[in-house]
Length: 271
Image 1: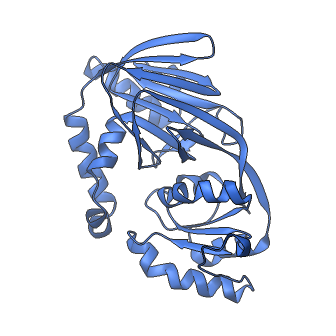
Image 2: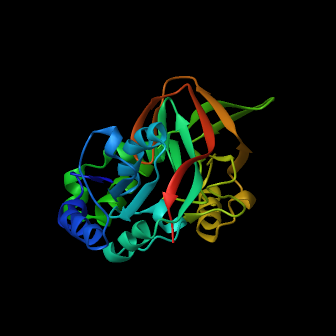
């Protein structure tokens, strides 16, 4: 197996050696190698962003991915019910049971939970690794408040199948999973349903903002005023001027962009 530890992560540096020891204690051979012939699985010790960088290799080699969640939100691990303590997560990898889940792609960048344009993308670009390492979740909250303060709506044209939608939004999110953003859970979505869910937030007043926030917290997104939702296998998004895109917190180019799902493309170790 090949082990990947996020060098920018405080928890990755703290627990990287513990992951190695725990896997070896369970008779799992770990070799930090680039030799494709010697890799039969990839173990990710980090968050969703660390996983994103290894998806192309996992798909190219056709090997499963093991997750030891050491990130801030660990949305995929929570979706798959992978525990956050190192010993239990390594035990799941040693157990050998795998499940196929969907991967998604935008502008050639893979992701597993969500890709965003607007507030979330601005937030991801504002976060500095050293601040997250020092202040953790508080750094994210501070960046979020600043991103919302300077949020500006933008016009977007969205194509899916034979339909076209036009929105004036402050945020577009294209989700591959029912869980993303650290606390958002969506009814009727799944990480293996072969579909993407696009959410467009169109806020004109404080009442709509409160309505959308309440709907997000309660998991009733499809009933919120100011929030439009669409479901499809692929979306093409065009904006009047290029806007930055982030995928699981990592840069993914700018609009225009095509978001697409790769149904059952990725194998992961699960309980």
